[in-house]
Length: 172
Image 1: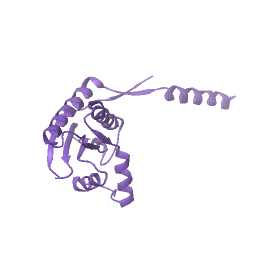
Image 2: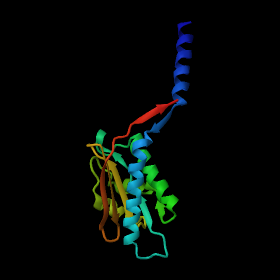
Image 3: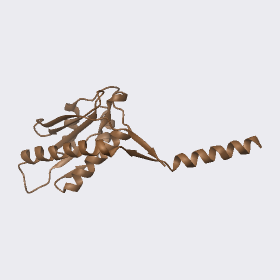
Image 4: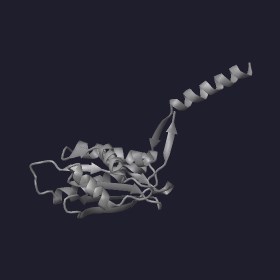
């Protein structure tokens, strides 16, 4: 009898957690990321000289350094997806999937324990045929940091650091 009660309790907990949805506190997060996107869009448009074609944008993984190096959290994953959505929705860019970037890193064994610097990411971006790379993170000081690098020239076109400390909420 104890086993049956335990089994029912486990099944109830499993299904109640499985139906939960993680939601980002958009009140603070959305405006910060959207403002950064519009600033990045402007910086790229000012730099892009081949106006008849769409530049390829590579959006790198967004890490949450509040929890350590190269840690992806629900919030940093949301930021990455939001930037991808915004670049695609603008219809000004070809967006290169970052899973390709990860595949190249694994093949070349660049992904070592610790930090992968911007130069390596720019080299990888060239191999993917990208013209611009977007690198973003949540710093250990709870700021949203983003930059855009021209892959062909390695010129830093845009950089920002904005206060940012949204919370992930679990809704049922």
